[in-house]
Amino acid sequence: MKRNLFNLTLFTLIVTFFISCTSAEPKKEDNTTENEAVQEDAPEEELTFFESHQLHYFDADRSEDIAISHENFLRFLAKTLELSEETRFAETEVINDPAGYMYLQTIAEDDLAKYKIHIGLTDIPEKGYPNLRLKDKLCACTSSDCNEDGCVPMLNNGECVCSDCGTDCLKTSVAVKYSADMFR
Figure (cartoon, rainbow, N blue to C red):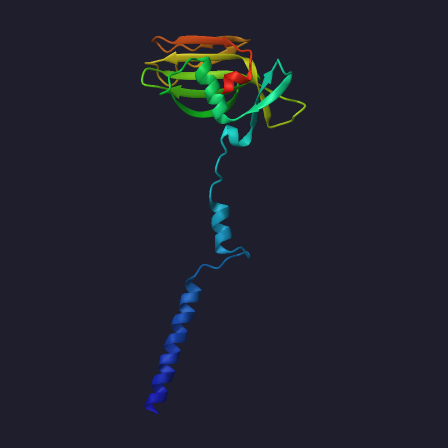
């Protein structure tokens, strides 16, 4: 009899324990699994410009738009601006200015200077969004002692202008006629 009473008490304790453990878990209002809930709460990763757009240049000799990769674009900038091999490039992004102009901004630096580079962009109507074409004007501003807000390039009605930074800010304006060699 004592053994049965012991077993009954033990059984009651075990059942009580399991009931209290399951009621302590938060109840879900919907039918999503725990993994789905975690995925919904996770912030979306932002795509880079080259992951979300296809960049082109217009090859006048061939009369067609040619798609280029991020690496090809950086090679083009390094060749056009005669940047050193030690130049490090930051992320490239699309900027829409208040006047309605769209341009690609790239920031680069080496041991001597920081380069802020803008190049105009335009839509390619026959290819549709997110295909964009490089315009034929590149504006770069180079400095060694400017603050973040200074020496910023702007394409103002086709003219390259660099904002003031209180120290030397070298402006480089390049009219570009694209060819495949510029991207190799």
